[in-house]
Length: 538
Image (cartoon, rainbow, N blue to C red):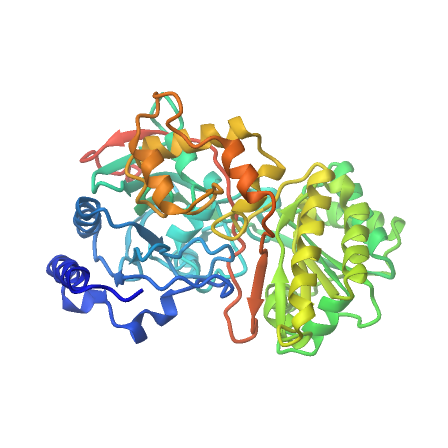
């Protein structure tokens, strides 16, 4: 429906007010300018925003949100747009708050091993900036060269080395956050009381916008051993994963690639000499001090062989190690050689259930006559089944949707969850009733309303809504203590039950940058009113 003259006039007035805050160059509003912001790394979901705003500071961000709040306009924070859940989309003609200009490293404290940064900083740039100090920032999602610290905080990003070192929540000490009404708060793990920083990390932009963060820096491990083991059976490889952990070893990383992935990688620029006839390879990385690391590597190698590894090779130098990890991180892009379109699933299951769940994923793909490829964080059971298809074939899309849901249900039946690290966002909200009760989801909405009473902060994400964002805002503006203030789980469940839930359909994956290995998660910390400064490590 075309906008009427009054709506156009109001929109023009809003755009002009936004420009007064951030400058003329800090607002995009023309249709061709907005095109790139209608989706994230998951182009299945497209929602063109009303405008895109580029604040330069926390204070400008607060002014922008105060204005939007006064006008009742919703917004979505965005870092680099590498996410794979539709989380950075401004649905309902909202405004995208793009933090790309806020990319400064504000301070580095090598003695206390912390850094204070603006959240538009690209993840990999922080590690490069402190490399001369023998330090690095640990979380390393596959999109590390392009994803931002703020996006990592929103999704509680993990990465290849999260098995040993944890996810983003384990490396964030404090955050400065702008709430939906423009107020500024500091969340700090050092304060007593409720852990509001941990609640914020992984909230997928639905509680507010983190504009600054204090993060841990870690010393670069002095010794690293990287093993490549190849198997003729996927089940044997997955059983070896549990055996390594059960033996008391804790690898920094433990990754699996199946034959389809191996072939795609070896045909790409990421080729690393992986054996083309292997049904699976495991990459096992151990790090620490020199004393004892060779013994651990020898022990891991013996376990791999006991569980059917045909060969176990140790990277001879740093160049070979980097080549192996480039192959693993490049796998998502390389899959574009298998088919023009892929569905990227993301789920987590107990390690001990990997053999049966992997077998079930292959059975499901065969049932629907689809090719499946598996590349994933095996050490913590975080699966990424990739369903290959061609959107030009009409029958494929429905088969893909059904196969994707069947795989997700199989993971849940095995005691798993609907996402390991990519987040729920817009894409997976319909799966929440598989693992949460009506009361669980009511409680989540009440927590969300405590941070965002207006319901304007990234609406439509995580919680499945029966009738869209308008209802969410109506719910949020009611008192959270009022009986019936939150839509009941049964209402959305009954309306969602008959709907097919689209999973992550990635179109033209080679042309689209791989999305971040990110995830949902709520964990720890606390809440301090501004203007208390972020801790600088003194």
